[in-house]
Structure formats: structure tokens, C-alpha cells
Amino acid sequence: MLAAETWHFTIAGAAFLVVGTLIANVTIGRIGEPWTTVYVPIVIGWALLNGAYLAWYFIGRRDQRAIQRVLAEVHGPGPTDGGA
Image (cartoon, rainbow, N blue to C red):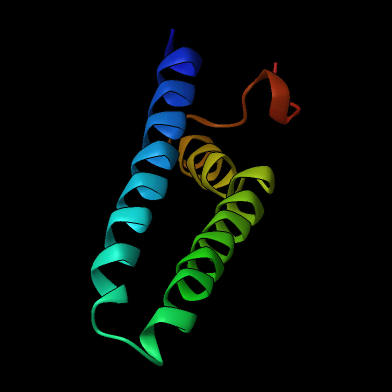
């Protein structure tokens, strides 16, 4: 269930980002240059940088390893850490 919820919020968030960017692009179009040519590439670049960071962080399992370290300090090594 948690995975389905995560995918739901990821897809819904991406859809809101696209719709918001399109609406903002129309609004910025009224301002004129240079904003009309740089807005969408900046938003896309920012989204790609955030996505790359999240992929790097979660694929590396840094958060899970930090929690495992704390638990091993408090409770000793578990079955996956070489304990009994």
C-alpha cells in the first residue's frame, strides 16, 4: 500500500508541476523577454537536479544505513548485520 501511495503522490506531484509550469508560462509570457525564454528551462533544470539528488540519496540507501547504525548501537547487531 505504501508503494502505491508513493507512486500516486509522485505522479500527482509531477502532473501539478506540469500544469503549474504551463499556467505560469502563460503569465510570464505577458512580462516578455528574457523571462519567456528562460523560465521553462530553469523549471525543468531544477526538477532534474532535484530528481537526480533524490535518486542518488535513496538508491544509495543512506537513510536506511543510518537507521541500521543507530539500531545496532542500541540493540546490538541484527541477523542481517552478522548477529544471531
